[in-house]
Image (cartoon, rainbow, N blue to C red; front, side, top):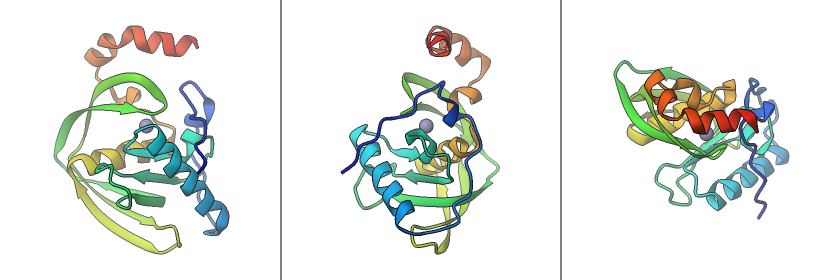
Length: 165
Ligand code: ZN
């Protein structure tokens, strides 16, 4: 078990585009194990590699919180649906901030699994939101970047404290 320290905003590792994974060997398996341990230790439903300081295109999504149901996505590509939905999001890298974010209600994702095999999933509901949130992490985007101005205004104090740390 290796629970890693979380990278918190404004850590620059959260803000750069993550690099592609080219080898599916033991280092990636170890990274994913550490991400799982860190996600569960912090009661998360998703985590991306940059959040434990690794700028590579790997994330985990598990909206059910049930162990064994985790989706591991390596070098993912997302296709967004048409309809939109608004939901409240939080992030392990932004403790105690919760804001309403507009997302697509359905997405399709192509990715590699831990063994390097390509797969494709279609998702709706909370899974679609988690996939977009985690995919954003791999581009250096955080959910606070997607808040409406009303939400930014509502959260201005928390966001200002964050920027000054
Ligand atoms: Zn996050």
